[in-house]
Length: 208
Image 1 (cartoon, rainbow, N blue to C red):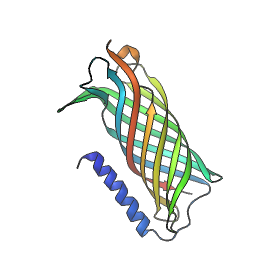
Image 2: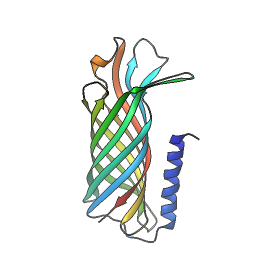
Image 3: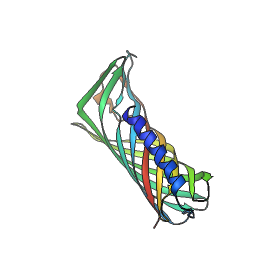
Image 4: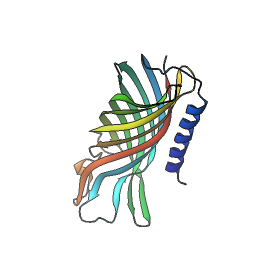
C-alpha cells in the first residue's frame, strides 16, 4: 500500500471511529468554526509536450497543509481557507519517473467556499457536507518570477464530534486551476494546460 492509500484509509478509519465513539452531542451549527488539516495531494496536467504523449508532465505528489474558518449563513456556511505546499516538477512514463528536485514550486492558496450539509449520521452531530468555491494560487518557483493562478475547488468532508467543541474530519476534494508555468519557462514544443489537484486528508475543527 502506497503513502496516498494510507492517507485515505487513515482518514476513513478516524472518521468512522469518531462517529462510533462520540457521545450524543448537538451539532455545532451556529457561529464561527476554525479548522486545521493535512492532506496528501496529487497533480495532473499543468504542461504537456505537444509532440510526445509518452511522458506525462506535472508536479510531484506532496503533503498539503490547510487552515480555515467558516460562519453560518442560514442553512449554509461561508468561509475562507488557506493552504501551503511545496512540490517538484516531474515526468512520468512507462516504468520511469523523473523528478527535478532542483526545480521547486511553492504555493500559498486562498479559497472562498460555501458549505452545505448533505447527510446526517445518527444523533451525535456527525455528518457529510459539500463545499465549493473559487480559489487563488500564489506560486513561487526556484530562480523564476512568481505567478498567480485562478480556479475552483469542490470537496466533501465527513465530520465526527469527539467533544462538545471539537470535530474530527475526513476530507476529499478536487481543484482545477491555470497552469503554474509561465510561457517563457517552457521549451518550444511544450504548452500550458489546466492543472488538476486531488487531495485526501484528515483534520480537526473547533467551535468556540
